Length: 331
Image (cartoon, rainbow, N blue to C red; front, side, top):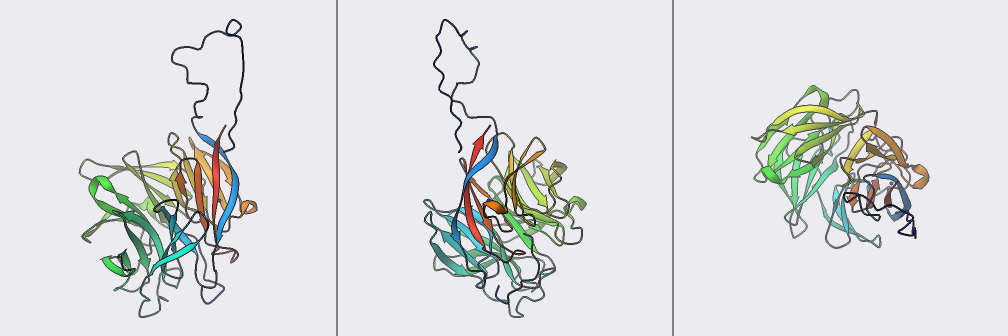
């Protein structure tokens, strides 16, 4: 998440096929271990067919911050400034599921930003969980949306921080939440027990926001640092504690959240201030979507097979918060 104070008071497959008909006598047989002719390429290299499937109400605070898959063909997002969770159908219909309680003090004490906002989102056992940053001690933390559309507090987090990225670690039955101001990753159990999982210096901010998006992949934790422009890989030790930290990607200043494409260890990431979506393959960055495709300060990305869903919050542009889809394509 990358933002400045709001200007308003209310607050991004091409399938390359080649049918070759060759005489068996003129072409030597393929080795037994060769990949089938129709095998998918090892990694993606571009994105096509960018389409805005839904545009949101800027003045109502419908600034999509984080995204997860929902039932059927829908996805779910947090609307940052309206403090809501919403489901969005494939047709672009928006269904508001619930609104977090307004903080008593108005949320003006929220660190760095000065307004209350819903951030990280997770879906666990058919229940939505959202992080909420208010700058107030009785509301900053992890909340659960119940079946009646009401929010229940699961765990309080430091009000001096800005809880942001959220992921659920199934192996250890816990959430991992990144704090972009206090430069920490918290472990939060389903029962609400909180501990600091990592507070390494590489998570720190450098003038604005540090640790941001959190994802699990291959048994490790990955976290972006917006100011540093890095995605960090943190080993999970046998006891669940944080282990060695290495840099998985760099030169991504303004990186918000990210996801893995499902092809090797390839990453697709959102660069919020520059309105870009990039693929990171073996450390090499390729821009695949820009503002010309409809991006407006993209905040996160969801991968489903070869389709990506990219919410744009328009924090800085103040123009057209939206949900965009595109198709990842191979070389």
